Length: 221
Image 1: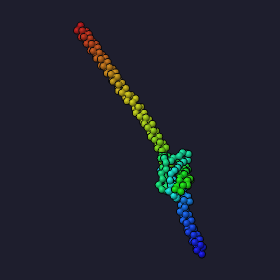
Image 2: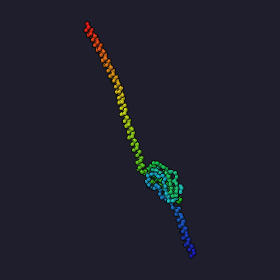
Image 3: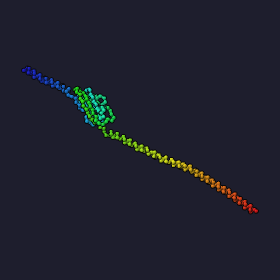
Image 4: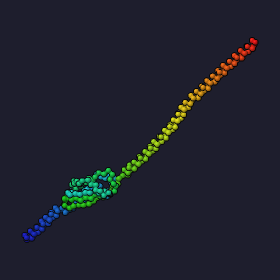
């Protein structure tokens, strides 16, 4: 009876010990899982973020590798990734005009369970329409300057009539210079007439004097 009791009492204690070992081993047997990212998988974004974040179910340890490839095939990840518990953060190379299209985040991390975890996240960059509209407004500005050039071209045509007026002024001056010539000619002709009249008067006076003397001489005889 005593032997049976001891055997029966040993079985429960053995089962309890095995259960305790299994419970303690559960965290080790569980694998780290990928929970999500920012940007999310299949997300549509208007601007390229400065950083991307990956969240896992367990604390992440080194080594960690994160790459972000754009539609042109370039890896725009800047430097190494930083770890803060279950979150891995990767900075991106700043780009003023990143190409629109599909971007892929590829990662490989290690967790405290010792198992490596790999995966990828895909999101799409599609800039907003106002940005494109602002870019198209530049040719409008250049075309608006063309009428200004045309207006400048019409300015010489305005000055050309003023050039035409110049000969008119010279003609006036020529006319004014020709006027004294006419007046001088008039003066010469007037003087000649006066001289001629005076000569005729003197001749008539002489003729009259001669005739008077001859008449007197005839009367005396």
